[in-house]
Length: 143
Image 1 (cartoon, rainbow, N blue to C red):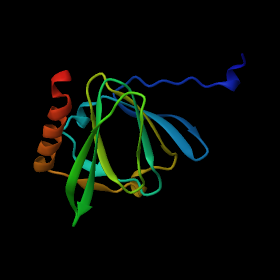
Image 2 (image 1 turned 135 degrees about the vertical axis):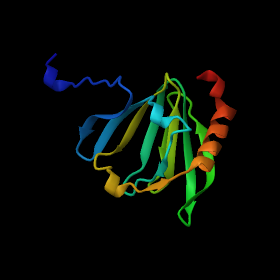
Image 3 (image 1 turned 60 degrees about the vertical axis):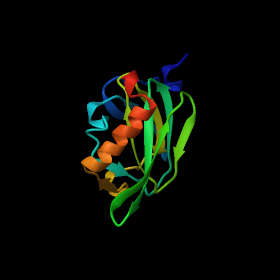
């Protein structure tokens, strides 16, 4: 088969990388990275131009969603992802995530998702403590 008819991509390093873009959309991979440990997460982020879809391929991942009221994080909800289900976070919803060391997540979003259209709300230790407690309820023992 002609190589021009197919692209085969992978990303096996720590962190996030776009692997395929086409017109207005991007497929990316997110792998475990220590900065996404709950005691190191420093922000929740919202995307103003796009929904963002997550699919757990391997390991474990928790998605955290929150409301932002008066520039403060409120009403944190945690979703322990199940493999091969699509978790679509709607445009404008603040979120973050944590993965265990085996974690690998596929992400689909608009190609032009950038920091200038994805505001962040910075967090402190009190919020990180909540994230850690929620993580422990799901799978801290599975590290």
